[in-house]
Amino acid sequence: MKPPLVVLHLDSPVPAYRQIASSLRRHLVERRLKVDDVLPPVRQLALDLGVHFNTVAQAYRMLADEGWLDLRRRRGAMVIERDAPRAPDHGQVEALLARLKDLTAELRSSGMSQAQIAVALRRLAKGV
Image (cartoon, rainbow, N blue to C red; front, side, top):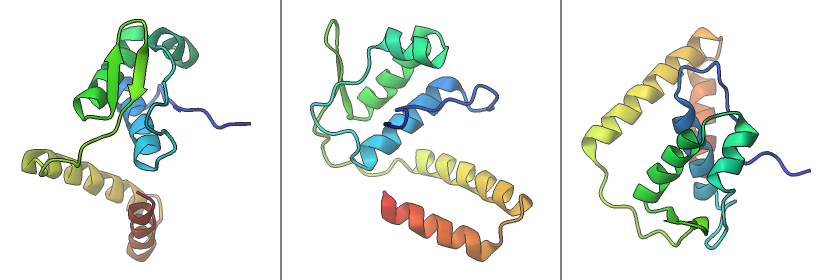
Protein backbone atom coordinates (compact mmCIF):
# COMPACT_ATOMS: atom_id res chain seq x y z
CA MET A 1 0.00 0.00 0.00
CA LYS A 2 1.32 3.41 -0.98
CA PRO A 3 1.82 5.95 1.84
CA PRO A 4 -0.40 9.04 1.72
CA LEU A 5 0.83 11.95 -0.38
CA VAL A 6 0.11 14.42 2.42
CA VAL A 7 -0.25 13.89 6.15
CA LEU A 8 -2.03 16.71 7.92
CA HIS A 9 -2.02 17.38 11.66
CA LEU A 10 -5.02 19.59 12.35
CA ASP A 11 -3.92 20.10 15.97
CA SER A 12 -0.60 21.59 14.82
CA PRO A 13 0.06 25.32 15.17
CA VAL A 14 1.42 25.23 11.59
CA PRO A 15 -1.31 26.33 9.16
CA ALA A 16 -2.77 23.50 7.08
CA TYR A 17 -1.72 25.06 3.75
CA ARG A 18 1.91 25.19 4.93
CA GLN A 19 1.78 21.56 6.09
CA ILE A 20 0.40 20.53 2.69
CA ALA A 21 3.04 22.53 0.81
CA SER A 22 5.81 21.15 3.05
CA SER A 23 4.69 17.54 2.54
CA LEU A 24 4.52 17.97 -1.22
CA ARG A 25 7.83 19.88 -1.32
CA ARG A 26 9.50 17.01 0.52
CA HIS A 27 8.20 14.58 -2.15
CA LEU A 28 9.44 16.94 -4.87
CA VAL A 29 12.90 17.45 -3.39
CA GLU A 30 13.31 13.72 -2.77
CA ARG A 31 12.11 13.08 -6.35
CA ARG A 32 9.20 10.89 -5.34
CA LEU A 33 7.11 13.27 -7.44
CA LYS A 34 8.60 13.57 -10.90
CA VAL A 35 8.24 15.87 -13.89
CA ASP A 36 4.84 15.41 -15.58
CA ASP A 37 3.26 13.80 -12.51
CA VAL A 38 -0.21 15.23 -11.95
CA LEU A 39 -1.24 15.99 -8.38
CA PRO A 40 -4.73 15.18 -7.13
CA PRO A 41 -7.35 17.79 -8.00
CA VAL A 42 -7.64 20.53 -5.37
CA ARG A 43 -11.17 19.56 -4.38
CA GLN A 44 -10.32 15.85 -4.10
CA LEU A 45 -7.27 16.42 -1.92
CA ALA A 46 -9.27 18.86 0.23
CA LEU A 47 -11.97 16.21 0.73
CA ASP A 48 -9.37 13.57 1.54
CA LEU A 49 -7.70 15.84 4.12
CA GLY A 50 -10.91 17.34 5.54
CA VAL A 51 -9.99 20.95 4.74
CA HIS A 52 -11.48 23.70 2.59
CA PHE A 53 -10.45 23.56 -1.05
CA ASN A 54 -8.93 27.05 -0.79
CA THR A 55 -6.43 25.64 1.72
CA VAL A 56 -5.14 23.12 -0.84
CA ALA A 57 -5.26 25.73 -3.62
CA GLN A 58 -3.08 28.05 -1.52
CA ALA A 59 -0.50 25.28 -1.01
CA TYR A 60 -0.48 24.50 -4.74
CA ARG A 61 -0.04 28.22 -5.57
CA MET A 62 2.86 28.42 -3.13
CA LEU A 63 4.61 25.52 -4.88
CA ALA A 64 3.83 27.01 -8.30
CA ASP A 65 5.43 30.29 -7.17
CA GLU A 66 8.53 28.29 -6.17
CA GLY A 67 8.69 26.84 -9.68
CA TRP A 68 7.60 23.27 -8.86
CA LEU A 69 4.12 23.17 -10.38
CA ASP A 70 2.25 24.33 -13.47
CA LEU A 71 -1.35 25.15 -12.57
CA ARG A 72 -3.96 25.05 -15.30
CA ARG A 73 -7.73 25.03 -15.16
CA ARG A 74 -9.30 21.69 -15.99
CA ARG A 75 -5.89 20.02 -16.09
CA GLY A 76 -4.85 20.47 -12.49
CA ALA A 77 -1.40 20.78 -10.99
CA MET A 78 1.44 19.19 -12.90
CA VAL A 79 5.03 18.83 -11.72
CA ILE A 80 7.36 20.72 -14.04
CA GLU A 81 11.10 20.84 -14.60
CA ARG A 82 12.36 23.35 -12.10
CA ASP A 83 15.07 25.80 -13.02
CA ALA A 84 18.05 25.94 -10.70
CA PRO A 85 17.02 27.69 -7.49
CA ARG A 86 17.74 31.38 -7.44
CA ALA A 87 20.16 32.86 -4.94
CA PRO A 88 18.74 32.45 -1.44
CA ASP A 89 16.69 35.29 -0.05
CA HIS A 90 18.54 36.15 3.16
CA GLY A 91 15.35 37.16 4.96
CA GLN A 92 13.73 33.85 4.08
CA VAL A 93 16.86 31.93 5.10
CA GLU A 94 16.91 33.70 8.47
CA ALA A 95 13.22 32.90 9.04
CA LEU A 96 13.78 29.24 8.16
CA LEU A 97 16.81 29.03 10.43
CA ALA A 98 14.73 30.54 13.25
CA ARG A 99 12.13 27.79 12.72
CA LEU A 100 14.90 25.19 12.74
CA LYS A 101 16.22 26.66 15.98
CA ASP A 102 12.75 26.32 17.53
CA LEU A 103 12.50 22.70 16.35
CA THR A 104 15.96 21.97 17.73
CA ALA A 105 14.89 23.37 21.10
CA GLU A 106 11.80 21.12 21.02
CA LEU A 107 13.99 18.12 20.24
CA ARG A 108 16.32 18.98 23.14
CA SER A 109 13.39 19.39 25.52
CA SER A 110 12.03 15.99 24.43
CA GLY A 111 15.29 14.33 25.46
CA MET A 112 17.50 14.26 22.35
CA SER A 113 21.15 15.14 22.83
CA GLN A 114 23.02 17.65 20.69
CA ALA A 115 24.92 14.78 19.07
CA GLN A 116 21.70 12.92 18.22
CA ILE A 117 20.21 16.06 16.70
CA ALA A 118 23.37 16.67 14.67
CA VAL A 119 23.30 13.10 13.32
CA ALA A 120 19.61 13.41 12.44
CA LEU A 121 20.17 16.75 10.67
CA ARG A 122 23.08 15.36 8.65
CA ARG A 123 20.98 12.35 7.65
CA LEU A 124 18.10 14.62 6.62
CA ALA A 125 20.41 16.92 4.63
CA LYS A 126 21.87 13.97 2.75
CA GLY A 127 18.37 12.74 1.90
CA VAL A 128 17.45 16.08 0.39
